[in-house]
Image 1: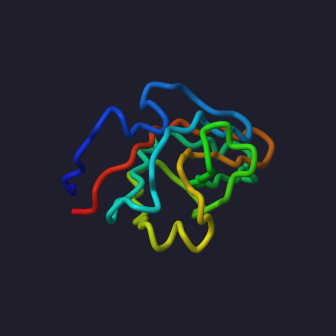
Image 2: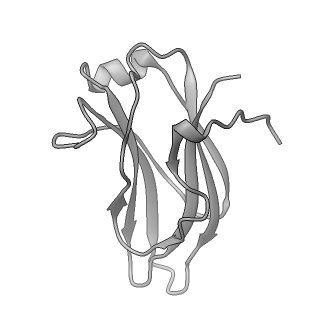
Length: 128
């Protein structure tokens, strides 16, 4: 297992927040992502419902000019198919390609299918 520095100020979704059963965007945090060095989003997925086999899951990172997220920009969106730890590299250069005014960041879970349910936590960490 890779070393993942953890800072409570960079938590996007607490690990004990419970299951999500519909598309949900979490509350964002202020982060000058455009001037940050290389970092990564770390997702710890502990449960994924695949009861009917048509469930779909995508975890996304969104940014905006402020924490009200009136006009979010999707930076990455990757599918999740099973429990595990997922790490996705981010950088100010990548974020700048999608959002030149990024000053806040959040995670969004997009769910589809008959009985979707996913349990996960997410935080940001420096790239090691």
